[in-house]
Length: 303
Image (tube, one colour):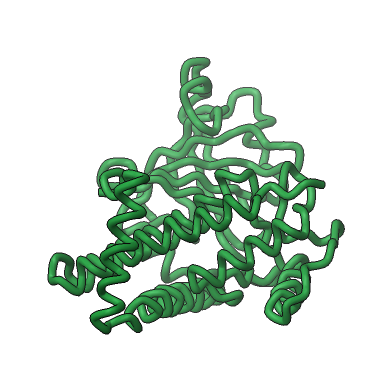
């Protein structure tokens, strides 16, 4: 397989990003940016420069418990100057559904080092840790919540020829419970215009995800694995109930560890550019930032 990231593209990405980070630092040193604004801009560049660049080159990280040992081993090899090794059965980096070229893996590890992203930042949630499978999106003052629900059977909710007006209690294999009063079947228009193509329009609550109040819940048909999609909206009371639900204790700990690691990575990147405080360094900062971003027009694009 041919590498998707060329040496020229990788070098250009890092040089342009370095120029922008130097320019941000120059503005901060001159009092044009607050420390908080500088940290925000660094975070945006850290995420855009790493995840955005991977997306542009068609590469996808696949850090799962089964691929984590190979990722850690490849990182150790790379730190010693040796190339990552092929491992098609446990790939941590994909291109088009297949394991990426070893050269691409090396390029990704180099980008991690450039943006001060530690391996621990990518440590996956353990398989034995119950975790919610949620897709949350802003929707006005609330969040639109799409939940993958693994029912133990389906309690007849989709087999009943006339479910309207009936209440069903669905249990998920992880310990979630959904109490649903079916209002009616979804119309053809509702199925076309909704991201889960609902089969039923119901109301109720989902213990472990929402507070007890009754709200509208859309129910999909099961997929090939028997998984239902449930869509509803969450407010602050729901988020509080979700945070306090005992099932998610270990998941919350993992998320908190990831958040601490993310903050440490950002601090490491900031400190790497703090180190240049001399007059000569300031001149380098001025020239690098001005030359690179006058040529590429990056400054205007990032405002």
